[in-house]
Structure formats: C-alpha cells, structure tokens
Length: 62
Image 1 (cartoon, rainbow, N blue to C red):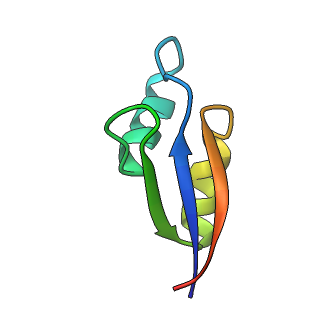
Image 2 (image 1 turned 180 degrees about the vertical axis):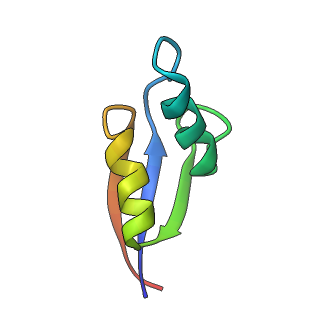
C-alpha cells in the first residue's frame, strides 16, 4: 500500500484542543518531526483537519 510522509511544521499552540489531539494521534511529539503513515482515508481525514500545521509528501509504495 502507498505511504505518505507528514512533517509537523507549525506549533498547535493557540489552536483548539481537538487539533492538538489530532497532532498527537498522528504520532508527533515535536516540531519538524516527520512520520510515515499508510495512505488511508482515516489518515487523510486527520491530515485535512490540521493541514495548516503540517506538510505532506507522497512516500511512494511501501
């Protein structure tokens, strides 16, 4: 299955708690951290919710 790389670029301070929770659920612990996830609709929905805080890059095939 295809993967995507997500990088945490902007702090969630000042944003709603549900967005902070989404950042944590994606696996981020610090700024500029990059995590890899399978490209599923669930992950895409989470990324869409915090798109202003992260950068997304296509990781290709796993």
